Length: 448
Image (cartoon, one colour):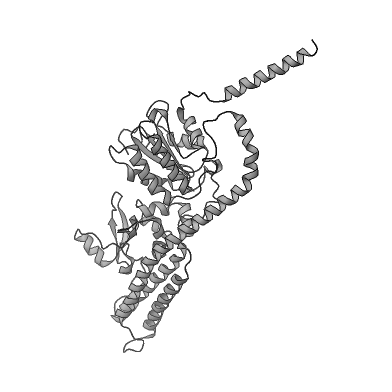
């Protein structure tokens, strides 16, 4: 009897442990439902399709979308959810973000509606809303809508994907499996951390090279145009009527021309271009002053360049202008573009390459931010570009640190570690963007 009692106790303990493990393990036939289950799935991978919305996005489509996000190494979370009581629309994206616990850009398809929200360190909430609005099309299927959003969002995002994506078998809920692999994970931690850092560094260097290549084309055009303006001016320091003030203006214009060429030749990062276009803006103003002196006109006021094309020179006045799908704002315009607006015509906009298509620079990619920033200054530019593609991206601290050197929104956001501690802070005081429960969301009754 003395030996049987400990044996029975041991057996009882083993049975109790087994029951505890079974209680912790998810049932094989259980259906994942609710925000908590969606959040748990997003901790393990970038795309979650609730069983109740399985008809919207096939498994193959979800896998392809997830692979695209993983390949880009960006913290983009996508959830496809049914419009039912388990996913109340009010505050849905905020709740999903809070329970997932990782800073990022969250895109949610709820029934046949779509919206997005983001942490400011990854993308400004305004940019997230603008991107979401740009892909919404009546009757669009989930695959088309989500792929369009992801394709546009990934190049504009900052940060890296959570380290655990793809490293955990989400179908296994028995803690023993995690304990068995823990030692191997710890042992490989140092090598994995180095690989992640190196991969991120190489990715950023490649992105900067591609952005700088785009900028070189545009800036070289600007430098050439300014050189042609110098030639057309045909000013000679010793010509009759030339005085010291004129010669000083001309000297400043020449210095600006040389400075722009030198700085562009030595540029190694996209943000280096700001100094180049700032020099060109200085030079054009000097030419405008020189021209006024030679013609005995009042000297011009120092104004920003024409918004529609800085090569038009200093602006003459401000005019109301509304971009496609945006709101009206005052922009500086040259006399020629002011006349075109008065006649009901489109201004002569500066177009640049955007994936093989010529577009106005404010509707092109993020690479052109430093180019525009040198002409208009960090404080002025976001207001001019509000509601445009480029303006939305200029509003992000992440964009400024990657392309603009921090001039537009206060510098870098930190180390790039996207944990739950990143939830607050940023330009809006925390996570934000579009949401389904207010301001035109799912229960607002009027769309977006």
